[in-house]
Amino acid sequence: MNYLSVENISKSFGERTLFEGISFGINKDQKIAFVAKNGSGKTSILKIINGDDTPDTGQVIIRKEIKMAFLSQEPNLDPELSIEESIFASDSEILHVIEAYEKALENPDDGVAYQKAFEGMEQHNAWDFETQYKQILSKLKMDDLKLKVKSMSGGQKKRLALAIILINKPDLLILDEPTNHLDLEMIEWLENYFAKENITLFMVTHDRFFLERVCNEIIELENGKLYQYKGNYSYYLQKKEERIAAENASIDKAQNLFVKELSWMRRQPKARTTKSKSRQDDFYVIKEKAQSRRKEHVVELEINMERMGSKILELHNISKAFGPKKILDNFSFNFKRGERIGIIGKNGTGKSTFLNMITQQLPVDSGKVVVGDTIKIGYYTQSGINPKEGQKVIDVIKEYGEYIPLSKGRTISAAQLLERFLFDRKKQYDFVDRLSGGELKRLYLCTVLIQNPNFLILDEPTNDLDIVTLNVLESFLLDYPGCLLVVSHDRYFMDKIVDHLFVFRGEGIVEDFPGNYSDFRSYEDSAEPAKAELKPVGDNKNWKQNNVKPGLTFNEQKEFTKIEKELKDLEYEKQTIEKQFSDGSVADKDIAQKATDLEKVLKAIDEKTERWFELSAKLE
Image (cartoon, rainbow, N blue to C red; front, side, top):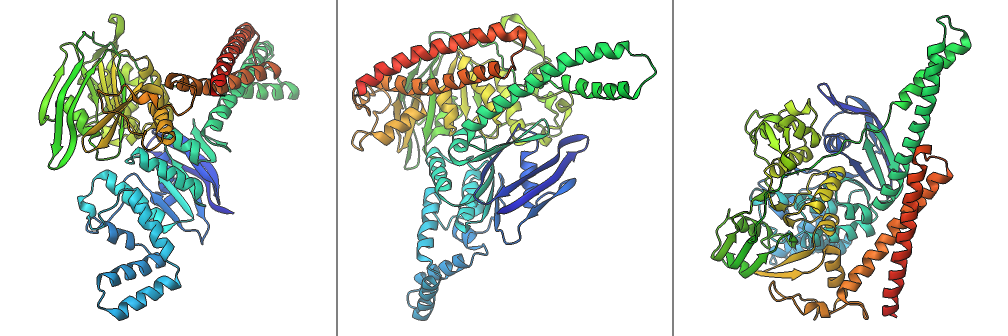
């Protein structure tokens, strides 16, 4: 059943065209992710679908009886209402029945009102529904039902808006970055909720784990064209790579034909026959195809990192509390050169507070923070960039100089640097307040990196960044030689770039886990409750003995898991190269290189398969 159809919509702002002629449909039970680069109009499309904006051309047709809900990045809530009042402010009949019952419980002396409310609960079978909505509120940490919206943080408002939508159970749910402002526990609960509920979803999200586990279709907007993939994130990556390879092969053939046809065109007399005119018309079609090579504009990150001495950063018995709430309790840690640490924990356990103490933006209650003389900290905060009124993009970068130093004594102009961060010459003279959320984050990242830090602190760096920029940022951080400290709920991101974790448990307890997020989750899920407690930072030597797979040490277990993933990737790479040979899409000049690549892949498969059998034998 079709719920919604988007027909040939277009949107422009002045001379800038976001998209044109976009068409797609959303059917019952589909869970669709919409993927596109920042600034290409993702949020505009969601607003058009929801009726908050109008397209320049085209229309959106919604099935009449369909109940649709939209979760925006800036929820529209009444600031004077409490959490409970906000929930019951909807048009849901069953919620009004529950509201009447809740009020009756507050006035037990009014027997008539209680009996009427009780009968209403029975009539609408609302008991299970009440349990479900209270569970949703609990999972999203909406426990204080009397808390007013005007007293809530931005993250709490987003969670309240999400809770209201889930409680009302719409037929079609439109989501704009649903995992922003959720901690890891909430995200994993939401994944499971969407996976088991019969709900139709259309969402914009950069959370690749979420895409992998929730979505069954991905629609990508790239260079003004829509591409649809009937599968999850892994399937999308595979099919996109195949599509690009096929497109490039087609362009290569067109280029070869173009050279031949160009030679023929130059030999033609001015007088045209009908046959030659037809061939000349075809020539211009071939020419357009031959010149349509993909423009792979990617962010280029490069810094001239300051030299790092032997003393990095030392934390000596630091403590911090806000009233009775402990954040840290005699916490000590000495950072080593090249340390790469991820920080995880529930919202409110003090992760950002910890970063602010390290950067000495917040005083410690006791203890000492010692920063090495050669350490230059780059701090990417959640608050983001604070431009001056009327400031243009290029003005932000010029505050650091007309020319920015790079490695090996080279320099780059402010305009050239912005081009590396995907701000073309025209975009550089846009006012900062016109940038999309993702573009603002990209500009902010640029300002942090051009200061050439050797100790990089990132507080939720992945929020609002598109998947393309995330992949480039990950590649940069993998090669970054300095120290790295990251707070993030992006599990895919954390898995790639950190070596171990600080786990903030609350009440001043911080534990050190020597692995990435997937390692931690596997350990937490598999270990017995009595063994699932890690040692506090500074005393974590013995926990590894609690292996979750008999016969393997912790490091062997990590290696075993890693090899299984690498073998899948290598098999896919092998199949891709073999397919290119079989369908003749490899250009003559590339045959030798492709053959060498295939040989390397086959050798790697043999070596890793042999090691996999060695480790498997220990499990038997």
